[in-house]
Amino acid sequence: MAFGPATAGYDRGITIFSPDGKLYQVEYAAVAVRQGWTIIGIQGADSAVLISEKRRHAPLIDLRDLEKIFIIDTHIGATFAGLGADGRVLIDYARIVAIRHRFIYDEPIDMESLVRSIGDLKQLFTQQAGVRPFGVSLIFAGVDLRGVHIYKTEPNGLYFRYYATAAGSGEQAVVEYLEKNFKTDMSLEETIITGLKALRSSVETGLEPERVEIGYVSLKEKIFKKLSPQEIAEYISKAGVSK
Image 1 (cartoon, rainbow, N blue to C red):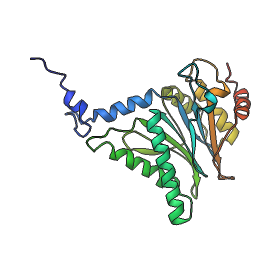
Image 2 (image 1 turned 135 degrees about the vertical axis):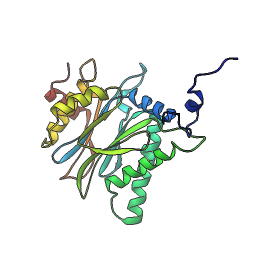
Image 3 (image 1 turned 180 degrees about the horizontal axis):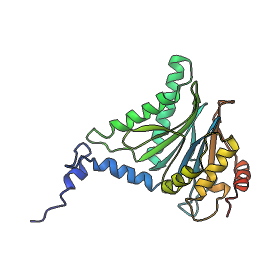
Image 4 (image 1 turned 60 degrees about the vertical axis):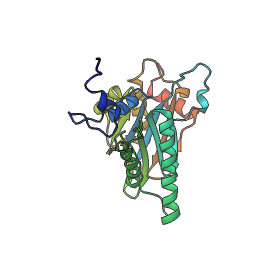
């Protein structure tokens, strides 16, 4: 009689711990994140920036309509790495949480409350039978009464606040670059340029405006905005990462 691998039962059951204390399906969800397009979040002195890589995974796709950075509320933006459909569902959920908070309390939601709601939903999907974990990590950039912030949520529901972070296939290279070059007193322009250089360190070819998306929020304006392709091209030129 043939027997499967010793880990097979724990491999299939999302609610079953393996003997070494692992939930394999949650770990596989993290693998899906590491295979995703690279995303970056960086906090400057008075701004928070999101940068996302965009790839043409089919020859006839129009990259101009491919969105990777999303406005959650007027003061918060988000991006994700991992399974696209899972990311879209969580982006929509985050928007509902933010809108509901405004409707009930007549004020914008603070960053940690929003991120905690996403983390709670992700964690719920690691302990219920008949479901699977979300195969995405989300990075949020926003502003509230405490200042500008960058948060990242993991597939297991954990979330942390960062000065700078990344997710996706280029995470290791990006984090290594940021650990060497990040500064807490960077202006908005310096923050964007640092992020572009970090992204360039994780890809084989130079950056192009249609393959990059950038969003930011500043402490002064308190509105999350996305850069146009023309503005992105200018920053790529300033950063010297087109080659």
